Structures are given as structure tokens and as C-alpha cells.
Length: 356
Image 1 (tube, helix red, strand yellow):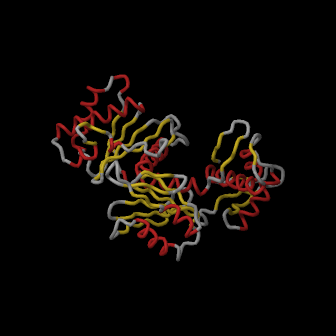
Image 2 (image 1 turned 135 degrees about the vertical axis):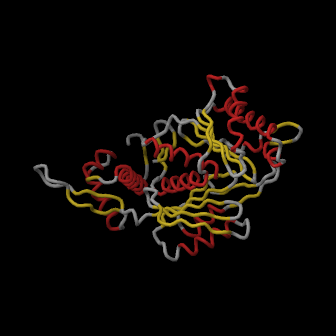
């Protein structure tokens, strides 16, 4: 960890996060194995594990078989002690999931809501959950809007010129004293789709993944973008808001879709949008779906795309099998990442900021 600086308390938090992350990845380890993997001294590992044991965040699994010397003790995360709570907001309902650090679902519910005051509705749900779940360590919320991740606020609105602001993440974090990650719902879907791909391919990393995930709903069209395995937010967190792509004559993609165009016009416009995004970000994979997407036209859309896109740079175009699953998977994983993220490190040699 040469080149990094921090106060003793900060470095302790970093080391705890490193140990937890490794236990999450590999399932169980001895003190010596954790020391070797993380680069933390065995003395420090021993001290931090004792503290984690006292806090019930880590459990002992027993002693390894003897190899001639002293038998080493093996440790693992207490999966029931640290839980993640993730919300997925839709127009007239809120779905939430409680999971352990391995994304194993402990509780899943869908709540019909009577207003679009999502803060009020989530607060009601949280007040009820907190009565029986004191081990919620992080909260994630997938929202339909432009998210300021650092401030945990978001902007929403169907009109490009008129936006409303909600401080939902900031408020919840302060009220319940639990860290909150706020993310755009389409970004959560794209991220969740990549997680599902990793699970299906049985790999730990998809750093080469380049994808745009386009989603059609009654509220409009949006997308989540992943380049080289990383979610793209943009300078003003507006990346992916393709519903505001201008089509000419004062019309945007959102208003075009809402006008319920004829199939021919729909096929041509959607194909042009895919071709445009292909020129800008060059994805290998385009995933399209959503409740209002005309799936029956997918083959014709692909054929029309081929007339707008050079054959050698034609992305694979697929239907999103389950956007709800993708969104929940994405926001759960982002919440778990927050739970085990530790703190920011400042590299004095490169002046970059990285997260553990």
C-alpha cells in the first residue's frame, strides 16, 4: 500500500474493508491466507478478526486439518449479520429485496403505492422493516431520473427543460444512519445484466464488456451504458438519457414513442437510434426491452440496423429477458459493494482517488 496515506482510523477502516471483501470473494480463509492476499500483517489481521468476531460480523468455521504443524483456524463472514436492502421504484409500486452479501434473497416484496412521493412511500416501508431488521448495513435505491451519486439526490421529469429534485438518498441516510447508494434504474439494469452474464459465464470480471441497455416504458425511453466493464454516468450524470435525442421538428425520441407511431416508422427510428449509439460508443452488445417495446418487430429492427451500420461494426442485438430481475440484481450488487467498499484512498504519487 505504498504511496497511500491516511489517519490511523482511516487505515483501520481500509484494512477491515479489505478483509471483508476477500472473505466475500473466497468464502473462508485463515489469518495467514488473509495476510498474504491483502498484504496486511498477520498481527493486524489477528486484531481485526477478533474485533469482527466480537461484532458478530465474522464467524469461526473450525480448524484446518493438520499438516504437521499447528492447525490454522478458518474464518468466514456471518452472512446473517450484514444485510443489504435494495429498492426498485416504478410508477405505481415499489419493490424491495433484502439479501445477504452473496445476493441470496432473504425477503422480497412488492408494495403498491398511492402517490409519486417516493420518499414518503419508502420511508413508510423502511419504518416497518427497521422494527424487525436491525442488521441492515446498507440501502440501495434505483430511481427513474438523473442521479447525483455523490449527493444522493436525483432529478426527474419528462420535459427536457423542467426538472424536479428529490433528496431521497441524503434524507434516508441521515434519518436511519445507514449508508445509501442511489442509482438510475437503467444503470442498475445494465449493471445487473452484466452481473447475470458473469454468473452465466462463471467469470469474476467482465472488464471487456461494452454494452448499451435500452429500455422502453410508458414514461419514456432510457438506457444504461457499460464501457470496458464500467458504468458510464457522464459529466452531469446525464449519460444514457436517450429519450431526449432530438429527431427534428421539435420532436424527441420520448415524444415520438408516446405518439404511438406506425410500425414502419417505429422500426426505422429505433434502428437509427441504435445506429447512432453504435457510432458514439461502439458497443459489442445492444440489449433492448421494456414493457412498451414492440418485441414482435425485433427481427425487422435488426435488418434495418444492418442498412445503417457497417457489417464489421454491427453489434449483437438481443431482447432483455427480464428487466425487473436485471434492475434488482444490479441495485443489490451496488448496495453490497457499498457495504464492503471501505473508504476512499488518496495516492500521493499519482494524485488519483480510488475506492477499495
